[in-house]
Image (tube, rainbow, N blue to C red):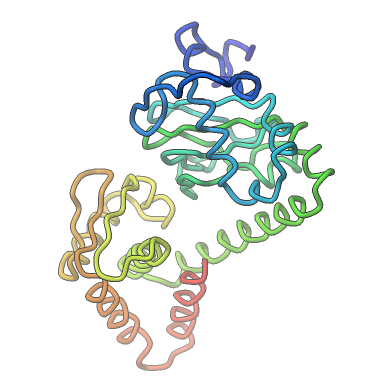
Length: 289
């Protein structure tokens, strides 16, 4: 049981929403429970285990290895703004986002990254022993908490998983470096347009796209204040970008948005100055995140 002042401290009602995967692994032979909002009302940990099997790099594990890893895991449903862990808190677990979005925040409360399902939190923290950033729930996430000791045992037993974790740490470091360069060299409009195009590309969309990520998370990830983000989003309206509500942005014409961004970069780099070459390089790095 977590201490009373811990963000993981639970009331009896919350205990009912927390499921141990060891129970799911030993259960079977019954009809599947009814499904609500994509997750079963009863024993949602079973679906969580199935989802974990599909999250890289856990796809590298055998069924037995995955069962050992998940035996003491817990699954949590979080309300928006619920803290998962604080900056410099001991890193006693790895967190897998199975649904929704979780944001990472610096000591000043500024959002530095947003992790949407399927995603992993705290890979580097697992080895450092403490969390570099704090984490907060956004967009009603479902999160699996894997105990640190179980993850370390899995890494010792699977060289492929260990190599994949090293790759995750390297990729996360490069992502932060590229984002920092983009913040210093690209305008808000350019950063937002590049981000939206990247999301559409990852989803395989080539004409239109609906992005369901809280605007607060996007703004923080791009290093923009809410007012700056709103102005940049308004500027992109001429390219068919539409804000539907606080969690939804619609790209009605991806080609038009790409032309707008190319035009912005073309104007910025036409005189060939060193600063403007840095801007183009920053955009290319940002697109490679």
